[in-house]
Image (cartoon, rainbow, N blue to C red; front, top):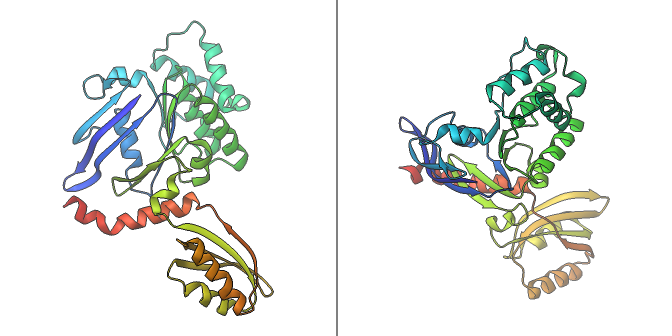
Length: 319
């Protein structure tokens, strides 16, 4: 549904985006991750036709955004990070205005608007002025506006900003349900949302894509090391020293302790022979191993490692 090819956006000699390439399939929920200033919102604004780009090509459902901007916009529902709401309108009046603005072709406006209201769960405030709503409800009204006209594609920039935990779960479930029928690009700083909602994740940093994969496969992007957790009983410093004596072990961290029992996490490329040696090293020092298991690398860790790894190389990459 969406093809982004060699997308570059410059402001003078500063790169907001530098040769960005990705595709989004029909019916896919794509998560867009990156630190502030990474280029997430710039990319979304370009796809929606809100701003232009310097180089490259963007196609939406086969239409080039530069050659056929209106055809592209007909297919997109867009929720920017700060929804452009008219605060002196009621929620219902605002949604009627958006309905008319989009020139929606449907037989029953009231039925359509009520369906949108039910999806984002704002029925209880539909007759209230937007100026009297909380930030979370205003965000939901903006989401409702993006859904009007039943677009094939949704581009949602931080859709859960300002929502309380219950509201976040409701919007997350709505996005999952909408993803069964629509193509969605969804950005968030809440990494647990990305991993629970999205089929695929793109991590962008300093205007360049640094990783692209499913949440489950992204751990491969930081190397072939495993994350291990080991629980031992004995002297903490001695146990830590034993672990650090192995060349195949790195990033040793004590993550919890209870009396003389300690949990250590570490990255490792240990062979089976190395694991045997580790066992005997602890045994010879009278430090029993109570538990040993692989642990999942979190999306937070992947995000931080990938963005940090690219930080030092970025300036030389674009010169």
